Length: 154
Image 1 (cartoon, rainbow, N blue to C red):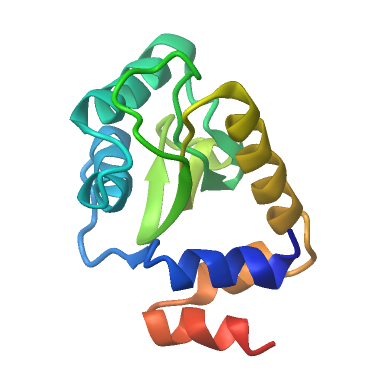
Image 2 (cartoon, rainbow, N blue to C red):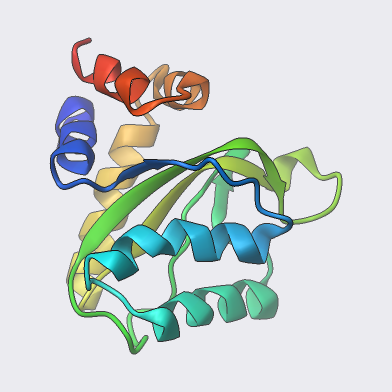
């Protein structure tokens, strides 16, 4: 899936949120990033709390590069009813380890998948998007949905 296609998919499926709220901590940031998928019936609160627990248990593995987090749990998670990726942009950095610039994020791509194959497809599509030159920087600069929509025109 090309860069533009992935961004268009997120937009066309109403899976983009620019958060007005600034979370007090990474747990709250994960919970906020899951809200869109909960609202759409793709996941429930059980899955959301499994993601938080996984970070407590395994550390901030979801921060895949500085500035980008990919909240997800295992393919054995309960509370998943569909497959999707949602995008949430926070205005300020969320630190998963206090003061560690390598483990902070403003861009949250929350993943949910019904099975391991769909989970791997999600990760591959997201990786393709994030490896495209300039995408992380462009997403980091957006402050409104209109800004996001402007990226679709490039």
